Image 1 (spheres, rainbow, N blue to C red):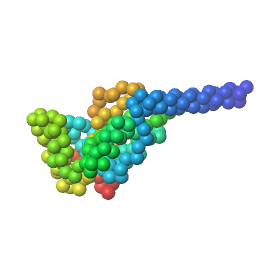
Image 2: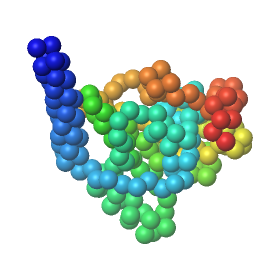
Image 3: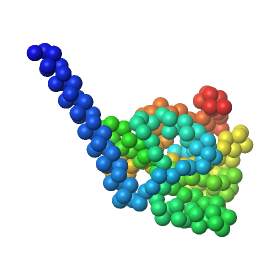
Length: 208
């Protein structure tokens, strides 16, 4: 009797895992359709580059992007909005480099998350700042002036900054938490450079 109870218990547990996985897959497919998302292969320079994880006044530099992906639970897929892909292709046809957004979909047994990155195709901090100034005008100095100087110091020390982790979506809702603190606490993903002190971390030596 105990044997059959054990078998039944294992069957129920397995069924729950399978059901949760199916729900996660259905949820991801629905999200993709609603937002016009399709699979996309990011360029290597983006995956190998470092990233900031706060839109305003970031404290740290993280990276590379591909190392962060490896830290996540479950399966991962890079996605891009169809209209964003058209905009990117049009810019490339004109020989222009532009910022564009990518979704990193992560599917685990119990949840689906979407990490939204902005790809930064710039070779220096001034070019990054100029794009923000074109959107924010005079306010750009207040919002991004300090960060521009910090990024310049990081670049001078050999860090290749190619992305910004803007926010993430959980249960269909955009989280109000700043990604910077969450990736450090939840995933133990440590920074490679302290933007405030302009010092490398121990993590940066490990990634070289």
